[in-house]
Each structure stands twice: as C-alpha cells, then as structure tokens.
Length: 479
Image 1 (cartoon, rainbow, N blue to C red):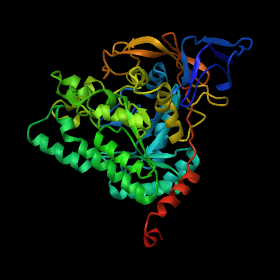
Image 2 (image 1 turned 135 degrees about the vertical axis):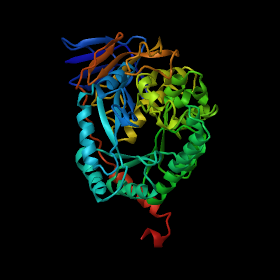
Image 3 (image 1 turned 120 degrees about the vertical axis):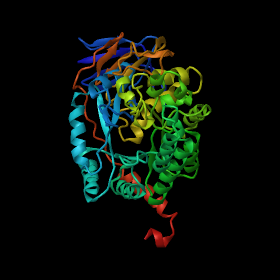
Image 4 (image 1 turned 90 degrees about the vertical axis):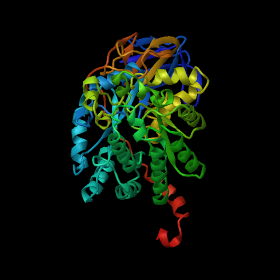
C-alpha cells in the first residue's frame, strides 16, 4: 500500500528541501514537490513539520540478563517505545557468558528479538577467548551480517575483556573487516575502588561515581585507542561520558586515527549530583556505567558533538525497576546498572541541541541517524530520505511539546531520568517500513514486524586503513 507524506520540509544530514515523500512496499519511491497520491494511498499531512530519517539508536539492551536479574524492557515493548519517540532502528547487544559459544548466545538473542516491532541489528560481545571465539566471529561476519564486536573493559570477574582478549579480538576484527567497539573503563581500578569504599562503610549509590572516576574512563579509552592504532583497526568507543575520554578521542582523530565516539543523551544532560539524592531509589535509579559525571563534562560532550569528535548519540537503554535496583540497597556494587531513554533521546536532543543553537537540524539528523548508519554500514538503506531507502521516517513538529514522565511514557520502567523535562519539538508521526507506527499520540507498533538487519563488513576500507597504519610501524615489526 502506498503512503504520501505531503507538505513538509525534508531534512537530512546534508540538505533541507521542501518536498513530499511517496512510499510503497516499505521503501521510498519518490521525493519531490507536488507529488500526487496514487489511488487508495494514505496521505499524511506534514504541513509545518520536518520530515527526517527515523532515528537509529546504536546502543540498547533489551531483555538483558545482568547482575542477577533481567532488564524489564523486552524487544517488543522497547522497540514500540522507541518508535513513539521517533526511533525506527536499534542495534542491541548479544552478550555471551564467559565460556559460552558466541553462536549459541547469538541464537538466543535472535529468538528473543523475534517479537521486535521495528528493525534491529546486533553487536556481539567478546567476553572470553579461544579458537571457538575466533571461528564464531568469522561465522557471524560472513553468514549472519554482524560487523561489530563489543568489548567490556569493566566488570571484572564477569564479562571484562583483558588486554590479551582485546588484542586477539581486535586482530580478528581487522581480518574480518569488522569494527571493534569498547566500553572503556579500567576494570581493575574500578574493582579495587569498590572494595575500598565498601570497607570504609560507604555502601549507597553515592559510592557508585566515586568507584568509577573519569580517570578510569580516560585511561581505558587511551588503551583501547592505542591498541587499535598498533593493530591497524578502527575503533568505536561507546557511551563516552567524561572529558578525559573525549580528550583521548580528539587527540587520536587529530593524528589521523580512525576512532569514533558515541555519547548518551543522559550524559549530555545530567550530572553526578543525582547520586546524592536523599531518596535512595531516586539515586539508585541513576546508577549506570559509566556514571553521570561532575558538572562541566556535559558541556564538553556537547562540544564533542559540535566539533565532530563524537559522531553518534545513543541511550544504553537498559531498564530496571525499583524492586530490581533494591537488590543493592546495602551494597552499591549490587545495584543493577542501567537507565532508560529510547523513547526520549530524540526529543531531548532536539530541545537541548537544536533549540539552543548547539546543533543545526542537519547535524541533529547526522548524530541521531545518518552517522550511525554510515559507521555500522546501514547507509543509505537507513539514515537518509532518498529513493530506494527504507521508508523509516519521522514527521517532526518543531512547535509541539511533550513533558516527559514515567507516568505517561511507553517504556517498561517505573522511573525516567528526564522526569519533568518539557521538550519543544516532538515526533507527531513515525513510519517504519512505510507504515504508521506512531500517529496522533496513538501507538500502532506490531509485534514481530521488525526485521533483522544484516550489515556487510568493511573489508575494502580496512585494507586501505591497514596499509596506512603499517607504514607507521618499523619494518621489522610490520613483517
């Protein structure tokens, strides 16, 4: 069935143009002024609105088993909430247990995701190493369309990847044309600080940021980047939260290294004072890693987006309710780490980015959609409004408002880190595969309508990068 989005202004990462958009069979078939709706086509009035690519959230954790519980948001509810906020694609994470075959974990996550309402892909975490991991990485890239692998440099005695694992996995990524991604925190330092704080009797949520200082993130970011530089593989750092980590990215990019950085909407807005709230649950509800940072880091991260040293925005959407967070009431290290935001990211970024002048509309599209599509090889199928692209669109009313609240959001969690914030500029219509999934305040998401996205590898690009990096290494080492 055809659908015409009529009378709007099409905004992409590169252009702003008055145009109608005609979609049929899930793809865009025409973009231009004065398009006529075919007989029987549905017409969406976009007058006074912007028509943009649907958002891509490259960092979510739906239904994640973690820290003795399971995230409250599953793939159905989480992807539906995403589309209520204008996001039409997520890239979630397969996280094998230590010694679990990567392919076994991947199949488990694929099964959970069958109920997703929007399109999705997966990064796969490397949490241990042996020949089977080497083999499974190859299968995932060549047969399953996975082109990114995650490495947790934190969570000692659980899923932490030490330097040996990083070296082996980064090297395998280079062979396969896949991009390694890293959660950059010095896991040993965090572990020792946690023990020190508990021994001192500091057990509440206020200890969480004390155990994970910005320096721990900066050190790990530098270590991951330097290792990637030596191996000759690009690297992507997730949820950059601190000036120290941003400085390492900026240094590396200025030197010509292929380093990419992601920032969360929450880290752009919230500082570490939340952990000192007198209400235990309010403080605990903000426990995530890396934690929210001292004032000053937020403005630095905005500048990172403005300068292009940070390219993508995400949420690290991983929801736990009060009963789950209370597992750590007497020991902050047992508070499940995670917050929500998949429904709020785009409105928050528009309100605090575009409305304040920090971002142009085109930059907004870049950091919420196009850049993630390019980095993870979904572009131009995703992240653009052009003929042949998937008809994943958001019709954005820059004058409409929404006050964020846990009482009214669609996310399956009893707390919202943006509670009470009124955003000017919200999605009034969201299209996924050419169908209206959010319109006029009505959520029409369909269970199981989401498709798994295979993402091709980057072998030709990596071969060129490897040659450049090899030229920097002494001949005896390069051989």
